[in-house]
Amino acid sequence: MDYPPNQRNVVRRAYILKKPCQPKTYAFPTRDIGGPHWFSIFWFKKRDWLEYGIYKDAAFCFVCYLFKNEVEANVGGDAFVNGGFRSWNKPDRFQKHVSGLKIAHNLAYEKYVNLRDGKKKSIHLAFGNANESVQSTYKIRLKTSVSCLSYLLRQGLAFHGHRENEESLNRGNFLELLKWLKPHNEYVSNVIFENAPGNCKLTSPMIQKQIINCCAKETTKRIIEDFGDDYFDILVDESRDASQKEQLALYLRYVE
Ligand SMILES: [Zn+2]
Image (cartoon, rainbow, N blue to C red; front, side, top):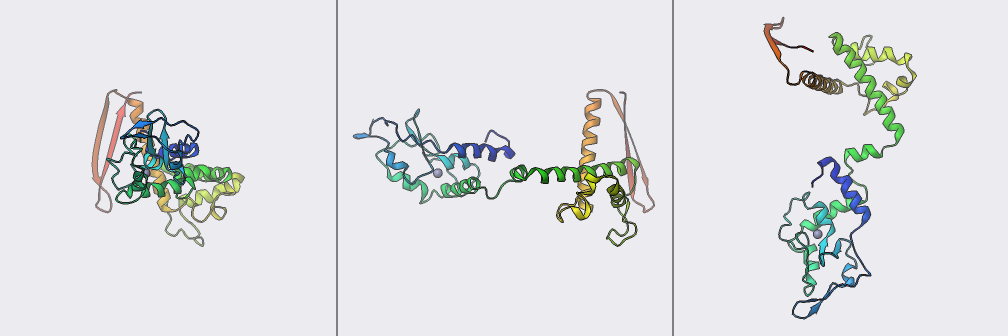
């Protein structure tokens, strides 16, 4: 849980690849608990969640360790999760951990199986695993949309047309600019419009707005980084536009 949320599944996968620590040839030490008792290797049988820690001479739950913060149910107070289980004279506790009130284990186990078998992948992982050509065509398509949008932004031009359907003679600045670009660049031509997957054309008004918002954030960030702790002045003025809406203009000035 010390890792950022988007890296946790990668870390968990690394643990899963290593598998739980089950030292089957180890000579388990004897402890006196109302008589001699020790960890039995038969307890590993059919329990792929069970781990034995040589250093602590204690047993732990591998899946609860990996997913305890991901499940709603409380696992607090369970020896397999906190500190380790050492009561070798009470082997019925193994069964208790996976049944009864402690259903947290079963929720964690479900998440473990899903991650191990590759189901319910995070978007990061899914994109990371997509084959390279899908990734590179996506990047070309995204870059093209960003370039057209930034050109329109810089020139202060409108994006949409009155009618943006394919039969329309003029589909608005953004789509017309893309269309104009198409015959001039083979790489771009191969991945946009009819050559793009239906759910990833990157041309819808919603996508345009998302990209514009990203541009705005990046621009603001760069400006703030640029003037740092220096002096600046702000000039603000308001005025009504033709539709009687108040419009506010904000100037930020600083010396480079
Ligand atoms: Zn468990």
